[in-house]
Length: 317
Image 1: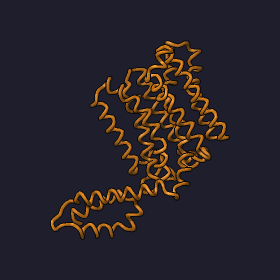
Image 2: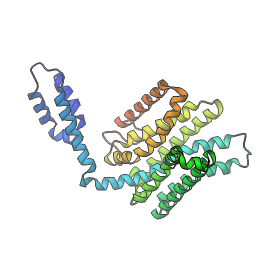
Image 3: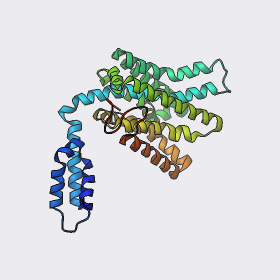
Image 4: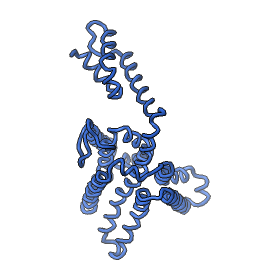
């Protein structure tokens, strides 16, 4: 195989695997036939044509009429995994509350339970149904959050300042948007409990248990040694990247990631200015690189907790 042919084959990765299997050799033949004598690299026009063609085919498959069942499955999965994510993440503050010597021992379990109860109830209703109960609770919780943030910012800025300041309204929208997104997912998901079946309840439990164990250890390290790097800057994004990488192997998984992309962007977009101000660009770039490595490793066939490989995945992950 010549160097040019090898580069053309790598370029065809923009096309879906089944399309490459049916038409790959023909496409390679056409590209090689149009190459100049002695050419060693694909020309800019060939690169643009291949990339554009691959993206068009993937977009048609992603949004075409035949993809409706896949989107329904993705909605069901996202309606379960989104509240599960918050339940796992909020376990960290609950652990710290239980270890907090500055709080009365009798109050610690109650405060920890209150920290976890809203997300736990959302997830329980999504899994056990009925769907209307989960949807109603999610909207009530979003409304409660809106009222709390509005009251807090009004108290800080003053009523007149709140009405005049764009910051007040924007901050409220950013803080309450995750709860609203979860409520929307539960509103449009036809059967959220089916999302857990698509993932596999055993797989879901293993991922959850492993994530809780990692975050519990990270929070204990933070509480004992103030190593906040483990908790906020690396542990949660790394776990999320592993789950996303494994889920991105299948059509339903990729659609689930697209549905949850606004949620992830909101959560980590809000943290970015604070991280840059406190720590600078270099540590952030290192963390982004590490998270990207975790995602790619999981995407290409890492077997986290028995979740299959890229060539032979389970039903969802």
